[in-house]
Length: 471
View 1 (spheres, helix red, strand yellow):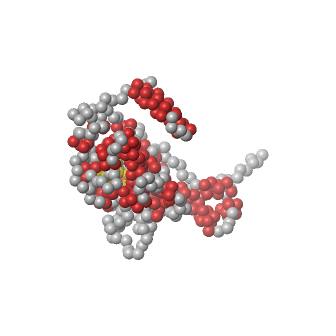
View 2 (cartoon, one colour):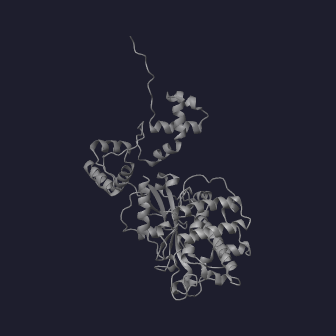
View 3 (cartoon, one colour):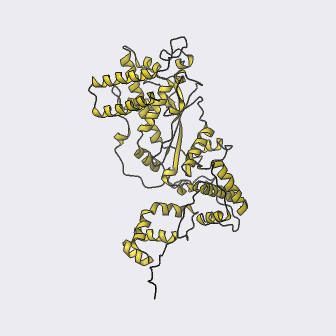
């Protein structure tokens, strides 16, 4: 008796899948017509279309085996990617890379990542096949960033680092270090009021790293009793950014997610980090020395500063309402470093993802087409009452001016809100204080025509405070 014949499955290689995508984009052929041409089923063509971005990323990376028909992901993807990164560095340095050397390095990387993994010959064979690695004639890879400046006349898009295309937009991060006069008021600057702020986000705007503030005070009194891990932003007691600590934490975070990401930085910063210990999941991509484009779009930085200034003026107005007859210049003394940290975190959260996404593309820091223009007014905070648009714009850009001399009260320990004038600290709030404050706040809402939406947010806060009080 003859067995019933089954239809043989015809799998397409990566090169053939890219050809399928080209035919669908360039011609008027339907998915069914393309399926007949490649002798596969129409659902298979549909799956190729759904995985278009991933297939194109594999094709453009230059490391994927283009004749391979099925891509089975490794169980140890973090080790897989870290070893591939090390392999390319070794080849760029013209080292003779052997199989035993790769096995030894894979075990070393696994130990660093804290994974119980012993690489075998079979694993190495599959790793080489997955990543299109072969031990043929030794050659030196071209550097990712040519030392020669780009020819004049090219657009910023053409000047992108060659290796940037190896990463998806979600994995390309930009980083900005900027000065901020954290409690300046319109028409009044103080030399002691400056902090250094570090902002970092990916080019899609879907991920924003925790804001870091660096100040001159080693231990501001306003931080007494505060648990730093519960704060929405970080504080560093120095105006210089602690790059080694910050990058090490970034690298660990990406390793926990099993990702390889690119971080755009100014060339001078990368030069300063030359002696930094190796990063396994973050690749530093320096912009050209002659480039005037910041590694985080200037429009994103300005939006952050605008939201910060807007929220700061709101806090100053609240202080004035509490203390009758207080001027703005006097109210600014009530803004502590801890207040600045919270205001900076809130301002960074207010910067919309669509603004970050479009700014990265417009300034040539990410490949792709500029998304449809959105309403610019919705991306920036409204102009505070009492200021014109020009005055508020000038207030946002205060850091470009030379601050006048002044003594920082918070540094000398004479702030009224920090102590009693003799250096004493305020007692820490108790659970009873927190619950009484909740009751006072709800009563104030009830007497001031609060919207139902605000009550919903209050209920969430109330529930969390009550939970913490029961711990």
